Amino acid sequence: MRSRYTAFSQGAIDYLRTTWHASTRPAEITSDPAPTWMGLKILTTKAGGADDSEGWVEFVARYKIGRRPFRLHERSRFLREDGAWRYVDGVLDPN
Image 1 (tube, rainbow, N blue to C red):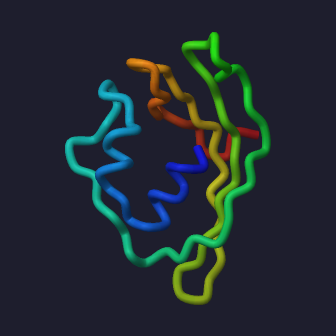
Image 2: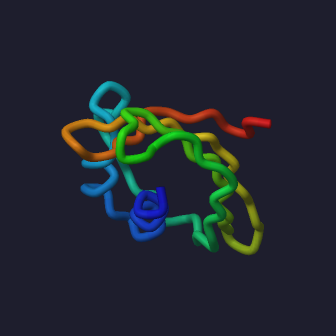
């Protein structure tokens, strides 16, 4: 999760593509230069250990567009594929 946040903040499209599960990966991934990412806070995790095939991460990512602050609150689902974790999907504002 932290590495995907960093990839978003740096526009590392190839890394995002690699870490996105093939079943939900968009045909085209683009980088939006408008947001300035300001921080990531992991709220909870569920499963995702060495013996798990699925895991969830709930997080809040803060960013600005211009001078206006925003926050992205999501519960993301990951699946292990070929020994690596891949982002599958997420629920925005899960509470």
